[in-house]
Length: 316
Image 1 (tube, rainbow, N blue to C red):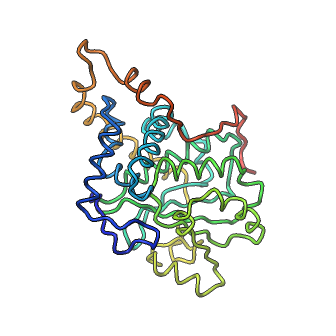
Image 2: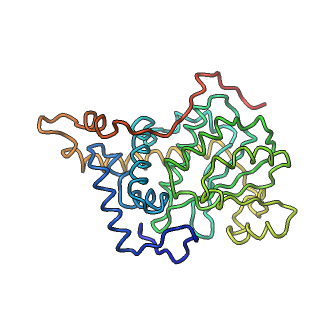
Image 3: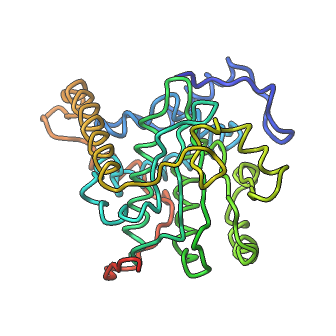
């Protein structure tokens, strides 16, 4: 996957930088980040990933370094690559988040979100399922694509469907730990009451993320053009104005995700074998613990809240 980008389509506030300068910035930031024996972190610190964090901070190495160190610290604690279907199966029961079986016209993975179908009260479980969905969406990107589309259906949504705490956590995870992964977020038929909720949420979003959010209404021909421009209408769900009558079916989706788990497990196994010897110090002891303690001293990680161990409840 190419990680060097031309700046000809950049916004007015985005820094213009040549491909050679981009590579220099990548090399500089990699020196700041150092080396790790953990294969999962090694994979996360790829040049493509470093480039995304730099773009998110307008190629400022110091700002990108602070951001990426915090993201690495979060990954070491949260271990998103280790989440499997059995860990989040209950969260997925209603189809509140799932990966569509089609991509958009640009080859971007499509995540469908239906916040009105929330079925649990655990903020921890909800964020865990979100992270699982993000990881699997990224794994299924094509070689020439690194971004995804969020397609949100507001059917059955109320102000109580999405607690503000979980919304803030979702924004933090997406912006701080998965920068430059969102290509477009479509809010489809949000009710009028959502306007007040949006006024509260909007300040949490950085400027670039806000520009990627589009409101689309089924009774508005102009906004419907967005759907035709982005999706193949024959493949798009009928709930979003497409001609595909298929709906979320839990058992078949579970099978898809379990297959994804196996694929991800194979990827990690092959990476582990390649890096096994390099992950030990002179005495043959894994050196990550001590190096991480010194490397992240004084570095803040993204703040993620936990609502405690609430008893999940089924959606009626």
